[in-house]
Image 1 (tube, rainbow, N blue to C red):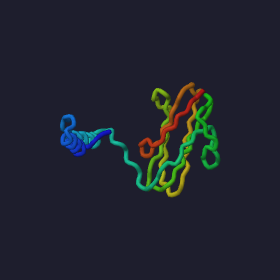
Image 2 (cartoon, rainbow, N blue to C red):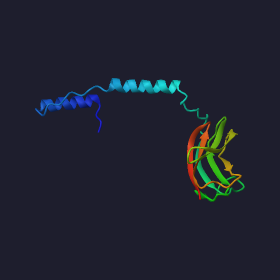
Image 3 (cartoon, rainbow, N blue to C red):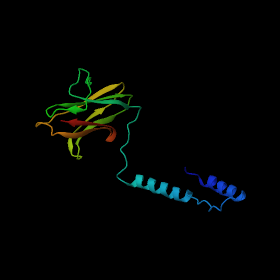
Image 4 (spheres, rainbow, N blue to C red):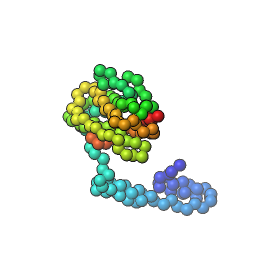
Length: 165
């Protein structure tokens, strides 16, 4: 349990008044916390590590489902996490809300972080949407673990793992 400086000081005074063991006075961690906060803010303002902006509006992803087939609406009706080497893999992204404009993208990665494929779509949603991303290999998929990252304006908001056996 962490105690704040004023609470720690009161505890020390109470113990001293009761004739308990001598306790060293609490140190003031406020200056340390302020310095850490200022350093974090400065790093966020100056560095390329700053995240891309989120879109305007209340757009948000509700689900991401992987599968081998999509229906007429672009939805994956039978989700799965394990695929065969020759399968075409679909990621159906269901979202709600609206925005004046955004880019929704999918980035497919091998276990070692190598990018297998990337695709994006510009959207100006006003109603619930289904956006489908699909990937297939000219040669069979190598067996192993993979990930698909779904991003809004290049900010990853959802990740799904899958396996090829």
